[in-house]
Image 1 (tube, helix red, strand yellow):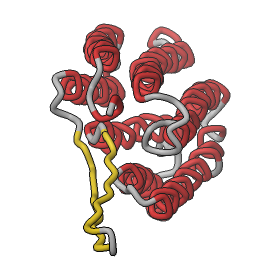
Image 2: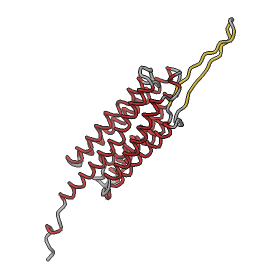
Image 3: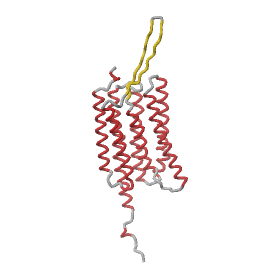
Image 4: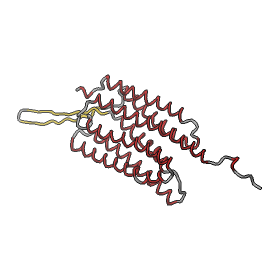
Amino acid sequence: MGDLVQTSSQETWLWVGTIGMAAGAVAILALGRGLGRHAHHGVASILVCSIAASLYLLMAQGQGDMIVSNSQVAITPEGITQEGSAQFVYFARYIDWIVTTPLLLIGLLGIGLVAVNDSAEAARERSGLVVGVIGADMLMILTGLFGALSLDDGHKYTWFVVSCVFFVAVLAVIWGPVRKAAAAQGPATAALYGKLLGILTVLWLIYPVLWLLGTEGTGVISLDAEVAVFTVIDLLAKVGFGVVLVLGVKRLQSLEAADRPSPSAVPAAG
């Protein structure tokens, strides 16, 4: 029954997540000052950390979990028998992820898909990529939740595979056409996009592995360990990504300003 209640270890790590996300939002707010027309990157990153802090607080207070259970009653020659199973699920994780992961992707796409070509065809292509990758991402999280709420192994791993398929679709877009578009904008933008892409890819690859090994999957690791690792990865993927994003955008702004001719360098008319 130990995995059907929130332990003090889990509560501690959830408070670490709450405080860490809140502190991350404040740090990004301070670092993102002066972004000007790129302020949306700072706003999105602050929202990501603020949403995550709220959902971690919900879980830390014991309001973001549920027990999924089923029971079967059979009448046998020996009498009536009853069998059941139960699963402890932090459903608030999925509320967090289904909102924050699209925002993280929007930050990444905002670097890679800057409108360098204003043609209607190019705009439609960009819109299609954004809608496609955000849709696949949300379906990835939603089907992962379906798997977490499934007690039957056949259903559970079917949803896990479906979720992984959507994850591969997300990776295909951000490593393919979006990365190509970022490279077309010059080495500075390509470098920043590559750094952000690497952070998201490496950290996001840990999530399905942890899901599979954790209590929602095979149960190889305990719920205590699962909560601890999820908290650390979440902080890196949200706070770490946000800090790299706003600092990287600031650096791009500095490079743009350095390349822009000063007023004194422009020949006077006449």
